[in-house]
Image (cartoon, rainbow over all chains, first blue to last red):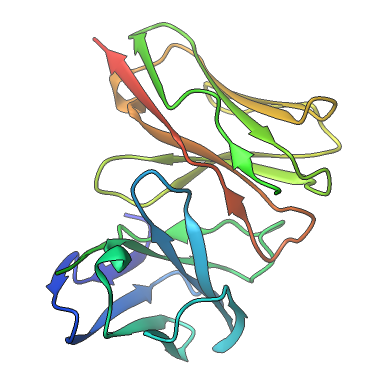
Amino acid sequence: ETGVTQTPRHLVMGMTNKKSLKCEQHLGHNAMYWYKQSAKKPLELMFVYNFKEQTENNSVPSRFSPECPNSSHLFLHLHTLQPEDSALYLCASSQTHDLGTDTQYFGPGTRLTVL
Amino acid sequence: GENVGLHLPTLSVQEGDNSIINCAYSNSASDYFIWYKQESGKGPQFIIDIRSNMDKRQGQRVTVLLNKTVKHLSLQIAATQPGDSAVYFCAENQGSNYKLTFGKGTLLTVNP
């Protein structure tokens, strides 16, 4: 275990549903990330939070809404998704958002299927 | 555009052999590189990193080589074991330490 947990591990939702992905890290880190991993595509950064403040939004559509209530928890709220949003959504954390010095630890991911 | 890519999408080796996984990058501003391992059903796991002021770095059974002249990165795994079966991908920082760009990945299969 990496110390980063994600729930649920699997999620199937319709295009009109609203759901949320949850990530929790038990490492005392201050930076948290959401990534999207699609088949046959490289890992894509979505959002970065550092000390609860969003520092990066990588041109993510507004149907994805992140929330970081504290440094240990990160949510991704989903609304009106498209089938092409089906992917593995990975959460990660690091001590700070300086990835040149601090290692990222990834959770196991949530496998999302949009019907 | 700038990208990180892999020469081989799959690699199959016999247990005990050495494995070499390659990665090409095109952003000359990149000065920090990382190799990750992702096993089935798990998130990526850091293996080893290297900065551009080095051309080789060794870990336990793994070695990363960096050739800045041809913008090439490789991961060598010595005495490959079945537990090494996974997808391996590289990442580069493109000159910024606050965002990494990842390659597509190579699936390594180790045959017993």
